[in-house]
Image 1 (cartoon, one colour):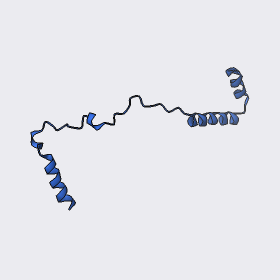
Image 2 (cartoon, rainbow, N blue to C red):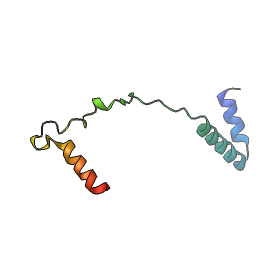
Image 3 (cartoon, rainbow, N blue to C red):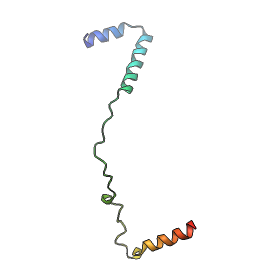
Image 4 (cartoon, rainbow, N blue to C red):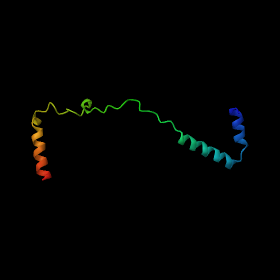
Amino acid sequence: MTQQDLLNEFLSLPVEAQRQVIDFIAFLRQRYAVVEPAKEPVDDNLANDSFIGMWRDRQDLTDSTAWVRSVRENEWS
């Protein structure tokens, strides 16, 4: 069956049947949709993230570990 034959068959159907065919095609498109893979692979290595080490040059945060520990002790106890 050619595309033209298929179109002629579709057009020969009653309007309600044409709607059902359109709905069925929409259902099939949704069911068999092709999921496109991500364009770029995600780098899960946090060491490569620009967020890591963003404050490394700050002189006022040289002993941030001790400060964090004291805050945690005060807040969590």
